Image 1 (cartoon, rainbow, N blue to C red):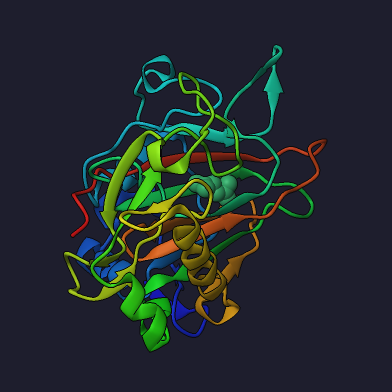
Image 2 (image 1 turned 120 degrees about the vertical axis):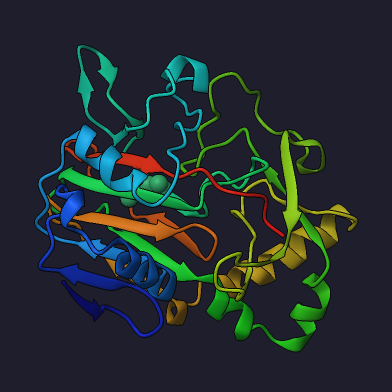
Length: 280
Ligand code: SIN
């Protein structure tokens, strides 16, 4: 197994492994690489849904899919592997998130115990677009200026559960009228990674978030400044997908976004995630 950095502060490509053969893997070394680099890329993999579930379960307990525009958690059946896709079969979209841009976010920060890891396998990719970028919120906190840091330290952020990262309302929810009363949960704006002890910004996503205890206008202005900082490309790495790629990232440290792509092309990704713990 070889580990090669792909960007300045985050991301590593792991080569010379077949991750469907979980018995052959050095799991301790992979876990350490994931903690060190935040995002791991494995190219040229052959993964069935069962193989992806087996590989993912080597790192923790599988967490069922989030509610999306396609269905509530109950309607989606709680299966541990699901599709992110724009493909329509028999008049029905086979997965969630369509072909639009997914804004910067961390997965499911609107529940009490957000997933630790997410894993994505590229089964079919469009000829262009649909790239996924990752950004390091430990680096973002390290480089935050003193004024912004003083304003956010010790505060909690309310994370909206009703809207997906592409802006769709999840099945079973109404649209948000006032971010202060949106459904969801609050977490500390700065969290400590339970395994590495490193601190990072934990803002969820820009849309429909609210900083507890501030006037709405103050919260909006502070979030705009923080998100401008978080979008700094210095902290980021963009992955251009090839069919057969598997990417696994650490939601406690990273945010991610997806570029839009031509809705007439096909993108089929298999997805798992791992049960997490309460951010603190
Ligand atoms: C996601 O946000 O989990 C999906 C990312 C992607 O489609 O690349």
